[in-house]
Image (cartoon, rainbow, N blue to C red; front, top):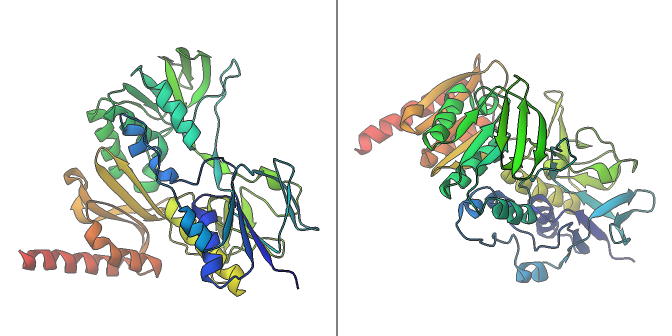
Length: 407
């Protein structure tokens, strides 16, 4: 009898977590992980934070040691970008022309950055991988002014990291208040003010319609009719699922790989996890994709367990994310929804220590926090089980009383 072969496409957080989940769940067959990059898998979350702010180049932390891979019999194949999938013959075709057979397949190819191309057909640099980090560090080594197009988490992290090295920075974002749809207006203004206090030129509420010129002499055209010069530009305008290699394969796609709450795709024995997975939640009748490190790890591991144990346990559904800027760590859980109001449960935004519930009626959809890490576990549990707002307020009151008593 042939030994079953599980293939994981993608060698980052979700893919390696899936491989671990397979072994933890009792998979005794072969496990192969295909990675597009030649680099040993590393922690991408550090690229726009400490690795960019450092005055010298530092290698990122690796995700798995050779000993771990050997002990768990995980065959990691680098430089094997997937280019196609044959679901009838159960083969993954790689950029090298290899055809890798599988019995069970886990798609964990993540996401790729959206690109900005200048009017002279030059693609602006982004910060997504280790090669990107080397390029951005080289472009910003002379402390020439840098323009960042995009004021999301990555754009703001890059701005903070570059300011730590003394680089002049301007940020161009489409929202008047950065990240307001995710963390609310108050926290968004706090972030905006913090960047301005560190001499970042914030240009909000405008859209870049064109970038002209070339490296060292760019012109940024905005939709309000203004123009801004720039010597170096880095793009950070979001990501999209890395699913083009699956087009025409028979795997259903739609802003990602369509799958159910357990990670099952439209094709038997083919699963998806991480940034690339578009998960249908039957209770809300909507799909969601998670583009954050913690979710990639949790989803990858659960899909691996489901495959190895022939189960359909749902993937964790609480979005978890964090950002580090100017020595502050901002954490957020859940999805802030349109129409939510932002209720301060602990501290206040001006003090840089706060916990905010994003709520409508009696429902809490998300929380955002800074400087209160020791008290977060209870709120996370309430959010996971969909507790009503009054329970969040009761917990906050209990913790305030406990703090007073401890003094």
